Length: 200
Image (cartoon, rainbow, N blue to C red; front, side):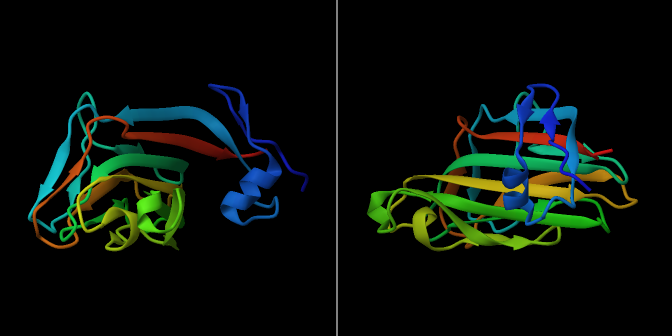
């Protein structure tokens, strides 16, 4: 089957075959188009985890959470970006939750480092790709748990082919150790989710 170029109908952005294959590890046999349904959310208020390892939903503006509804058999992609201040001892941990028995889930993530971390400047894709919801990503080393608190970037991306159960896909966070306070900034955090359809 020849490659069908996926296009975001809302913006007319084009994704090349090479870009798509690099993301999914496919060779053109997984072909989707953006359906045009997109959900954009952001944060306008800070959110803190205070001496707790219990997961909570990441809140969004103007109300609700960094989440989106997914119907049975739908396919979605999503990206979350956060700016956090990680307590050196408390750290942080994250997970993406969703409906039971999805057909396929691919979730990855990473964090931002600075020159003081000894790893140069940029993004490190630190977390192994998850193949199921509620897989915990722990940031206990590197750029997000230095010896002193500082700002750091965190990002997650997901490809979800849902099964027969409708539900909600949501980003959740907590401290890795119940110590001090770990905070998400009220600015610069956002979520972009897009529904896909199989190319004809």
